[in-house]
Length: 120
Image (tube, rainbow, N blue to C red; front, side):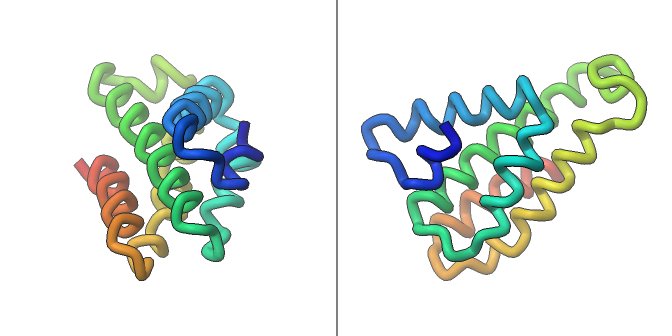
């Protein structure tokens, strides 16, 4: 499915690809380092691919924010000691920061929405 993100799949199935990618990353957070972060570091991505990466990142960040607000000690309760998912989410936020300077407004906006969600 992550190959489909890289290829800029057709718009008719793009929403499903974004949702499925976010769900896969939520189920197996180790895929964040393997699949998402390398793609976020490629600033030569086409606009549709970059937008898809911003949307997937938004899903992940908002999921983590929801988990931490629902549990008083969410890191220990949900993920055990060490806060691995919090660290991974912070890595995603850091990877989004350069995208806030992108020449395309909608890419900047999608990146800013994700960073703002993490900031709250």
